[in-house]
Image 1: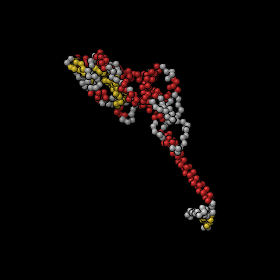
Image 2: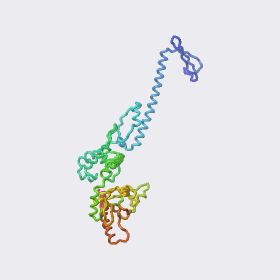
Image 3: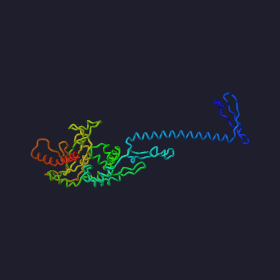
Length: 382
């Protein structure tokens, strides 16, 4: 006997003595049959149907949930190509974490969070074996200076561990940054010796550089004793001079975007480094302009020019030369503009006094050429 799908559902009526009346079923053949069921049997059948429906609904929900979780993992794998991103820098709960917290998914321990790496070279060789000369040759500073730098940067660089991995230590962030800045290596070649991923190297370099600018630049890079600088240049023949200015080109790799702007007059890609030197070759720099830009344009758009123009860079100290009152000046080559506070050589017909002026100015400006030579020679030596 089979049910007729075109007939309406059978109704069940309760009698006065709480017994259920028999209900009828129609067959395809058109016959009418009466089937009697006890109340307990009906209740049991209804419960079975309800339970079965709940099981089916939960099964479908779990199936959809597994698909969503699988898609989340796949997206995460696509975003983290190296599986080595510094997860301690991420903030906010992920979608999977929310599902686990709500009890809609079970937390499953992953087999690995990152590729297995080794830090033995840093932990056992560099920290424990290297002497001062090796530190100076590879990191451009001694170990004591490195540890002092880490202490100064620690408040801003220290991160908390997460449940997924331990945070990168301050010492590791700083040493990775120093190695990358000291060596013309790729992120990948820097990452391997320190047991991190190349994306972690990029993050560490930017973090350390930004923190150094925010915390240390104003404290470490200072003008120094102005009177000592003035006396130093006076001893070389130019009175009341507070510094000598010049620029040099730092070679860079060719750029795909606006590459022609970085080709200098010598025909290679570069950035302009402008520096104001004291009498011992210590300098305050401005760097980043494309190599094609003229010296005077770089200078006029620098913070140094603004402070000199406003008279707030040097002390208001003046001397009298002959019958002229002379304030503190800086010395530049013919490419720089002549200002009341910037002296440059004579370029027209020269008499003996002008030749003497140019000689003394050029003699003082030699500190710039020597400092640039030491800077580039140091880079070539390593």
